[in-house]
Structure formats: C-alpha cells, structure tokens
Amino acid sequence: MGKKIIVALLLTISFVSTQAQTNNKEQKPTTTKTEDPDNLVTEYFSQIMGVALSTTSNLKLYQFVYDWIGTPYRFGGESRKGIDCSAFTKEIYAKVFNTVIHRNSRDIFSMSIPISREDLQEGDLVFFKIKSRSITHMGIYLGNNRFAHASSSRGVVLSNLEEPYYKRYFYKGGRVSELLK
Image (cartoon, rainbow, N blue to C red; front, side, top):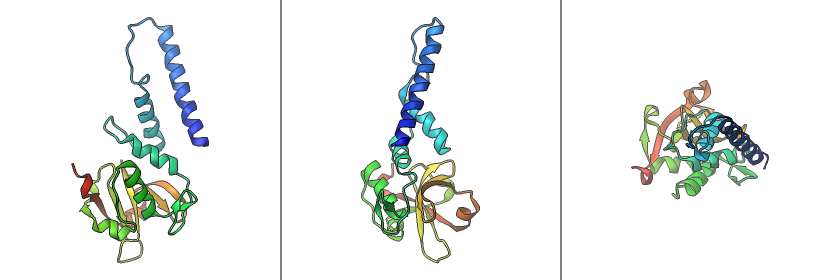
C-alpha cells in the first residue's frame, strides 16, 4: 500500500511542477514529455528499476514486478505471503503475457527456446545452475542486465546479471515460443 501512495505522490508532484512551469511561461499549449502520464510512469520505472524503458516497453510487466518487490521467498509458495522463483515467473507470464507456462524451472526451460545472454530482451527468462548440474533458479529479464526474481534469501528483488554470484551461475536465457514475434 505504501508503494502506491509514493507513486501517486511522485506523479502528483511532477504534474503540479510541470503545470507551474507552464503557467509561468506563455507558450502554445503543447504536450511535453513530462506532461504525458505514460512518460511519467516510464520515467519512474526507469529510475527505480535501473532500466532505460522506451515507449515500446511493457509497462504492465514493470508494474507487476514493482507490486511484488519485497514479497518473501517460500519454497513451493504461490502467494504474496511467500513465493518461489518459478511460481513468480509463472504468475508474471499468466498476468502480464496471458501465457500459461509450467510450474518448475526445469520444465519452464524445456518449453523455451534457449538464447544467449547477449540476445536477451525484455520479458525473456534467465536460468541459473547454482551449485548443481541442473537448473535450480530462474527470473525474468527486464533489460540493462537487470532481472526480477524470487531470491531464497531476499524474496522478490531486482538483481544484475553482472553481479559476480549471478554471473558465475548463469546458464542460459530462454524465450517462450508462444511470445516470439
């Protein structure tokens, strides 16, 4: 609830500030980047998620991730009381992409097309083999090396593929074939 109040407050302050600047200067009525609510949301998510969003970015994806940040980790969990990495990803795909995917990370990998780290795009999956020969962890790629996931130690968070831990255990990216353009 607190996050939503902060977002609303930031959007209101930005809007009021823009209106004050517009009223102080006589100019033709034009829509500037900061007056467009979609641009305000894009700028906001760009700042808090550390990803340069564009007009083609899926704001529904970023809103979903933002709403879940801080949810505790619970192995086998599927709710806001606690969720694991594959359930978090499954929930994103269901709510954001209207796509049903499997429930565990290995099965989800088997239904995706493997892609290299260099080819990752917003909405792709990232898979990790952490101290194992098989896939043990996953998340969803947001851009700029950032991904969202349910960390066993920190709950739902944003992390960077360049962090030594994730760089060491990164296995492959994956693209769900139903989402291919």
